[in-house]
Length: 290
Image 1 (cartoon, helix red, strand yellow):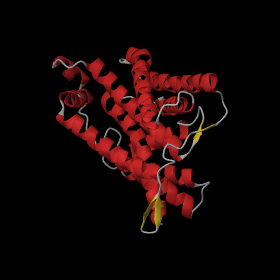
Image 2 (image 1 turned 45 degrees about the vertical axis):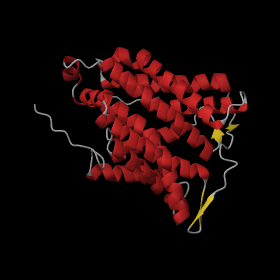
Image 3 (image 1 turned 30 degrees about the vertical axis):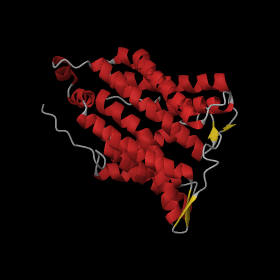
């Protein structure tokens, strides 16, 4: 049970890092970036090529993946989403789905459809024994990275000038513009941060489950979006809590109920939560005056 709990927290930490990208973009730009899961896939491929073909050490490969994904996130926002600032939510949603398919098919053309074995970045590090359970290095790194990222983002949004600008844009774009805040720069920065986190999540995901394909980020991306909704989309602590809970539920469902029904159980739990708390666990209910 302890081993399953640790594995669940580790998997949930990866979901939480991905969910942070969803929740930041939605909280500030009020849009759902369904191409986020495919940015994870790009991060995995960039780090794979860096290590296998260029001989880069793992830390440098992760850094390169973050740079590429950050640049990709900014480019996607500028080309696909910025022209739709005043468009309907449906138009933005369709554009996001189209961008997702574009990235998947571009990956098929560049890297092919055959699965690739992702190298073990922690092969020289022994697993840690704790209370009879073995904790793999990737599990420990995922948990620690999740905590560090969540704390750093919370401090960034609450203590820095740019972070406060993000919160202002989240509350009211028009009022933020009148106060001299560059809304376009703030939204682009949000996409940059979210995409950089997607690169980290992609490397951790491929290390934990070492099969890399153009569809690698699709299902984890959907589950991370589910975690963001579960915890309260728009809330950074909510993304962390939602991701960890989702990972624990999935691992325990696979271990004690059925591996084939695990995904159905995960989404079933989300439905139950939303029935009783539509805003998620830490989401705020907003009352609009009409």
